[in-house]
Image: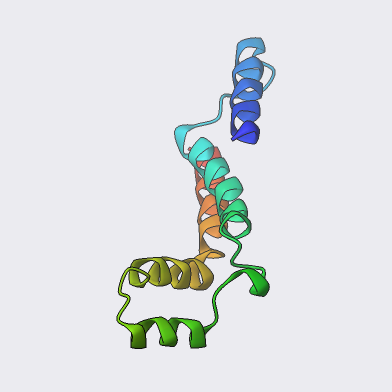
Amino acid sequence: MLITVAIAKLHFKIVQEKKIMELSFLSIVGCLLIVGGLLLPIYTANLFPLSKKSNDQYQEMMRKGDRGWIIDFKINQWIRKNWIYIPILGVLLFFIGLLF
């Protein structure tokens, strides 16, 4: 969050001084996706195997009849599979924003 605020303040200061061209909306969104996409797996602790539940623990919870974990499991699986695409999309949006 602090990084995002710092980027926004720096962007505003640069635009006010007109040292370089103003970043487009797509470039700003791209920057946010890059930072957010790289912090997402760290924040959710999906890159560290000791902090996530094993498949056996989820199977045991299913046998007990506890269904509240299903949404958490699906979100964690989605993050583990797709987190790398978020910063890649951010880089693409950043460069497309620089072109237009």
